[in-house]
Length: 151
Image 1: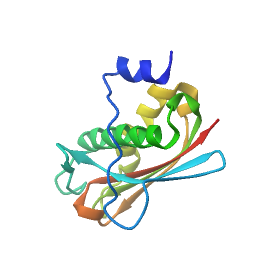
Image 2 (image 1 turned 30 degrees about the vertical axis):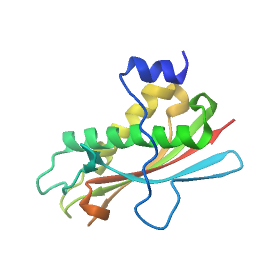
Image 3 (image 1 turned 90 degrees about the vertical axis):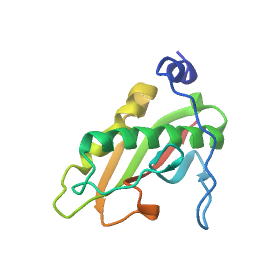
């Protein structure tokens, strides 16, 4: 099954690449690695704002991380032209806007990690970091960046 067939079966439509909000580009390719800039959580086209441990629950965070993963796939598609060229999702790095007492950043980030596994199978298994941070641009609850290896 092609990656696009898999996305269709999951009811996922890839979004266009978002315009960067500052002085950076959405992706850079060097050799067979593609680095995607951090994507913030969005809900209804606006930043999905909030802080874990102060109003947002882990389950909602998983949804936010999954939504970011879909945006990342849209950017990766724009970068390489065909998601079937992905050899491996190498790494995700997740920043979770959270209070000092919130300790479930890894569970929030699972929303993105699990989608990569659903879409790419074994090629979606990746290294990962999940950090709690005091704030993310525009007050977003989660930001995730991705590194992929391509053919």
